[in-house]
Image (tube, rainbow, N blue to C red):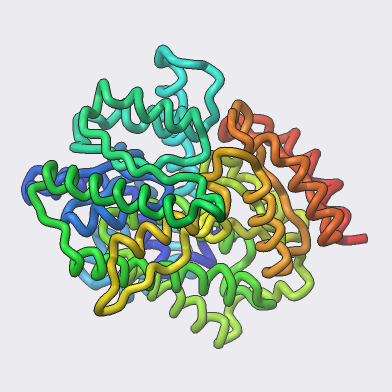
Length: 453
């Protein structure tokens, strides 16, 4: 879709993030074979301990072979000769002159490529001998590990609110013997101190296991160094969500902005396996967005309703943000912010980094992702977030076959936001990428009409 190409062609940072994601396999194999780095699989945005152990965190789908967009292939060839900035300028001129039409899609094509691979990983997970009624996210991540287990030295996992996630993780022991668990209690107010100790002990144990596997020592300094990098990444991420995402003028059209947020949601999980590089790309992305806004390059969205769509981290239909754009709205994806994973970890000269990390994990559990007893915490997180950032409406993405309280929360979430915030809400159901798109469009049309009445 040329609309995306027109916008993204001048976002060098987005092109870098996309290229680094899609070419992850070559990068990771080189790290493993030539530099003898250990590859540790991660998910849900917790790569810090792996980086602190001087090893490489990897969201396993990035070990797959992706079809690379012709634009990005041309970009890689040209950037070796001219550098990133000159290359994107040259290709921008090429587009204006209609040379080769190499920027016919770009980010839309990138996400389509990733989504196709997600479906392949889901199918690979489904055919195994386990319960057929697992959600898209669990099946997909299981499939990723089943596909790439020979390249993975260990799996770092955090106990979350999904019992099926925790059970599937146990089953990975048969293909990846090195399973590193970090336990996060639910964190009731009366047990805060005890919960912190449990988490701290679990982190200590995980660090010892990482040291044994990697042969590297994790120090206070290595932890603090990574926390500083992570904090800066989170700061830029929140700037994009709040400063840019809440503004009346976007540096691109809303569909492109949603595409970028979708790419960040996926790539944030392991920082594309290079934290410093990812930080530099995020810094550049914020700079480029601000410069475009300052120059008036982009789109006035002052009268465009802003809609929160969540959760998407365990699977969603990416076509939805394009539909909303065509219906006259704009989409925000903010899972990691809602669930507390964009909160910074305190770093000071005399601080205890392990205890600070334990506090970070416990605070995230209070947002709902690790809550195992009921959905009140999660409901309140959505309610507070929607109120604070003044969304015009909320679309809840219900993943079918989800066995956690998350599925049972949707009606409560919808009713609370309608009754307490007086905002329109709707529930859409998701099974697999590409399924029921026409039904989704029919359901969204009357919902979006609410904002034009």
